[in-house]
Amino acid sequence: MTLALRHSPAVVPTRWYGVSVPDEPLMSPEAFSDAMQQIGRERYHNLHPFHGLLHGGKLNFGQVQAWALNRYYYQASIPRKDLTLMARLKSPDMRNNWRSRVLDHDGHEVEDGGISRYLQLIDALDLDRDYVISTEGLLPATRFAVDAYVHFVAERSELEMIASSLTELFAPAIHRERIAGLSEHYDWADERALAYFKKRLNEAPKDAEYGCDYVIRNARTREHQEAVLNALRFKTDVLWAQLDALYAAYVEPGLIPPGAFVPDDG
Image (cartoon, rainbow, N blue to C red; front, side, top):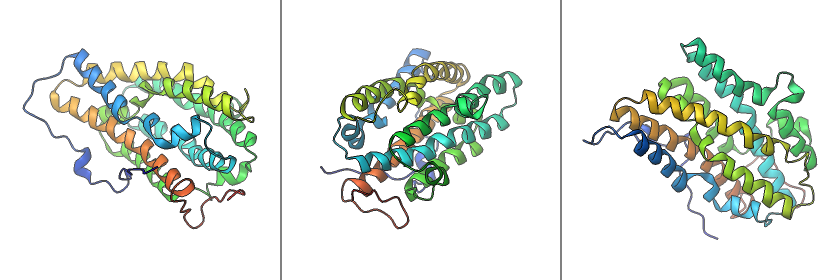
């Protein structure tokens, strides 16, 4: 299979994510919402060949381990991203609303949060928790892509940083596909291993609804709307770049960077 790689967000020219405003009027709320959905239909990482292999049971145990290990860094960085975003919000009401996202991942107690549930997947895949949490075996491109996301919300406008979270609009479908595919094809994929993804079926739609409503109400010019769409494109590239790196390292051509995780089976 030939894989067309996208550029990593860490090295994409800034102008790709600047706001280029055509001489067109403000989109209606319905058209604006559909434009966001169209980005998901065209660019969301459920379309990546690596996910086809993963959900179709075509990856060996070591390849799935590599996916889970690298995805951990993304999951563990979501509350870092959200706390960075909250620190820049001027409205107490917005900070209060956004706080639930941090608690979803970090938990009211650490043991009841999403990161803790994700580590149950790490256990099911016979990976050492301390090694995964250390990120010593991380692919460089995973680190660059995820860190680019955290930097994005630290530097961009309130509208853009909130818009960058809106891949949650598309997340429930990929979680359902993942739960079904992993359960069908892999013996280790039991209730405990998949607990993180099952919980997100309820959490993501709530978060997406709030974020989508906010950007529709507050993108009051065509320039604002284009900024929202560019922020969402940026986030899809962050997700896509992570799978590009996994595919290149662990599927084809199989070039694992120095220091990155090497599965026992190859």
